[in-house]
Length: 309
Length: 309
Image 1: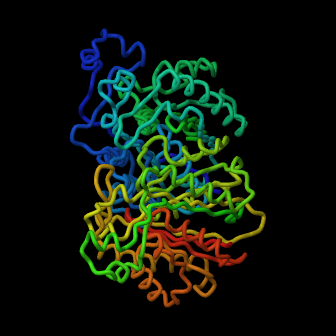
Image 2: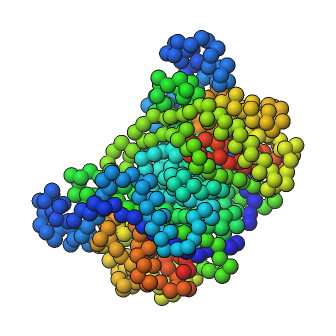
Image 3: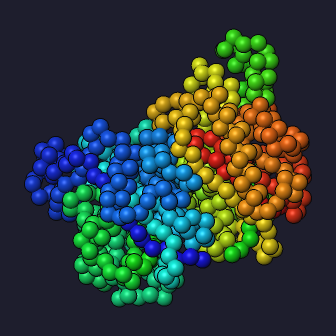
């Protein structure tokens, strides 16, 4: 079993920025309504860009920060909830754009926390020595599936993509995951190919804040770590009120959680890798830091990953 | 690393059978045209059933053949190219139908050979000791995405689902996979959520017969087995002419390949597990037999798996 390490990060946001002001007018709400309830000030929507363009953009951004040759990637897994092509998938479009040979591609549909599943799958291919380097990507174009008259989703969701390059390392590094799906109440967050996203905000809030905390505690139990051993928690950026509640329940200061939804909103599968990229850009993380990603959302699906920087 | 074994199989076909006669009239072709070119006599189309119903039906059928308690399943991976729900996926619908707790669910989009990817992922979770039992499912409702005026696809494709239960075993059993994606020519087989399936038959024929043979040879090179050591090849049931060409290039008799497309047509992700179920029903396979699954299709994606019964 090989250890893995994070070797690069990148993200891509469309150019078209939607400030709260624009939505305040549409929904006839006062200027602070959205920020107070969600912690979000802006989000981005695609104009002409396709979901493949966002995903490719995130990989280009990743490559700007590293000397890594993309041709060495042996697996590309893209998590999404809003693909427009059932075949070929987004991962295949990335492979084609960069002309990568000897590479296995697949897209996964596992709800908003799909990045967690994708990361865990790529890690397995590397840990078992089948490939040396892999790309884990989360990409979503939620503006396409948002009912722009539905205040529950329109104020929260945005478009974006994030990419993480992981690779084999000879240094022993801690890794653990705990991913689970919950069949109960799975009608509270849905999206069909020919419908808009439906979200029962109250029930999602309860699920996200309760089950996520349980899941994270179970991960820590598996690994034997304590919350004090963890440098940062990098959560799915769902809603600031949910993240505050999770910190409260875990009895940790908000500063232990990296939060960037103020600027980008909730981008479903893209939220964790976008946040992770920002953390690397800001040099927040140090070698040997242990971080935990936590994801939760439609499926219902949830999971956490502990990994060492 | 734990070995895995196949513990159960099942499939489900919709009730509405479409015989060649029906299509002969639509396309004004003579009575033997379709069979001569494809080896297909009939295929099945859904009427009211959804893709989730097909997938659940295949698991019900699997359970009829075994005493296994479905509650013990720890992972469900569904491969599809024609899902109607982006969230929650088909795997989550199966989890809900059977009320399975402590289970990880995800759907994958990896073209017609997605079952190969799904099998390989579930095997990894079991091999690493993270779960004991997993369901690998291929499900497709291609009639929804077929342009029924396009003779290239309408005569070939059908609907169906197949399920394979795999589990951890203390008996050492051979397993190897070789999966690869090919970025060249990936416009020759496509399907968007709001479009019909496009297939360039001639180019697919060339890709399928050439690259599949290369892929299988590479798998054998990895494992050190020879074709003589293999009891059966269970291919993606694309088209009889392609399968004949593959046998020809491999210099093996047609009898070494299990072929059932005459009755069910090409069901994309469902084709291998439906064929596998039939083989178990007919008691064709014996313990310790080595078999090879080969998949190929949109993406472009292809892969083969050697596993021991």
